[in-house]
Amino acid sequence: MNYYSFHIGDYAVRTRHLSPMEDLAYRRMLDLYYTRDGALPSEPEKIAHLIGLREHAAEVRAILGEFFTQREDGLWFNDRCDEEIAKTAAIIERAKNNGKAGGRPKKTQQEPRPNPAGTQSVSSGNPAGTQPEPSGNPAETRSGYPLPIPHSHISPLPPEIGGLVDNFQPEQPTAEQPKQPRAPRRRDAVEPPVTVAVNPQYLETKARLAAEMERPISGPPAEVLALRAKLPR
Image (cartoon, rainbow, N blue to C red; front, side, top):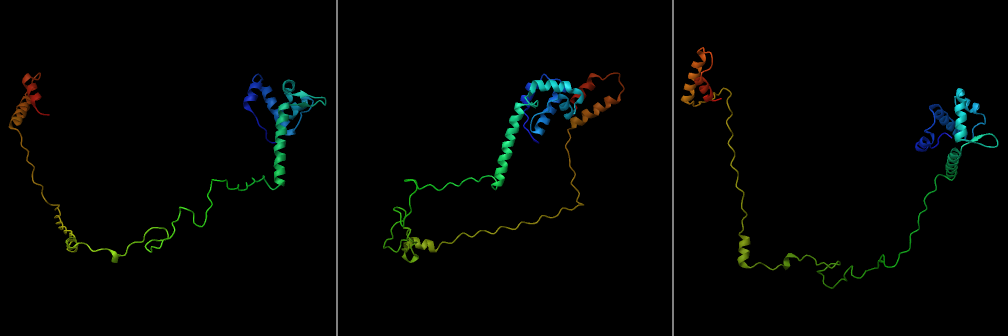
């Protein structure tokens, strides 16, 4: 066998007490068992040699005594391994049989069931209620709908209404006035100066504040602080 199902949960529960070397020996012994498709040799030293653990025959012997069973011929067997090998052999045999038969068996096509009573109506030449019988009136079609009436059969309108219709003139749309093109702006055009009205009181307050700031003083007088507070920011 080149493949077998390994259930991590089952293995972890049963081998949690093993030492690292015993765990390694058990894993390699399982691989050897599946590779041989059967039991292990009777001598623990030979098994240790086959799995590459020659110096750990004691660990191999401990694993054999706990997880394997020695039968009359001296070989060591494992029931779980035998079950997996039997399952794989059955799958391989079934695949071989399908290959000889030309692949997997195709699904059989079910034959159509007879029409149960009351489920589908059987069509006839003229089912009742679906198509009306043709009448002698030529103004009707086979489907029962009347044909359009020719214009020659339309009665004329009264004179007072006919005159309005004849003299009706549709409202003509008014022509839109063409838009006058805007004169291009000259690049050398001078913008008119912008005048800003200034409050004379603001200029007077600013001048007084400047005069007071130029005079050397030890500390800002109360008047300067008051003017500074009044100056707009």
